[in-house]
Image (cartoon, rainbow, N blue to C red):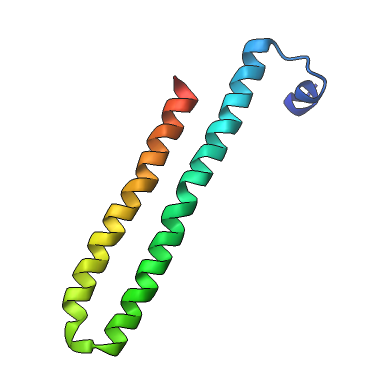
Length: 90
């Protein structure tokens, strides 16, 4: 009998069912944690490209600021990944 059939029939031990539920919840939490930074980085890069197109002489400063913003925004996704690992293995 496959794992999916066992899950559907509730024939797995309680500890395994809890582990499977925790993995699903951790995956959902990580997915939601990456949603915000993904939108934020997309918006940030779009606005930076628009600013560089409007004022090419300020492109260096805009690019530097863009990379700093990307780094800070990506840190949120990394924090979400750490929470995912903690939920999965602790």
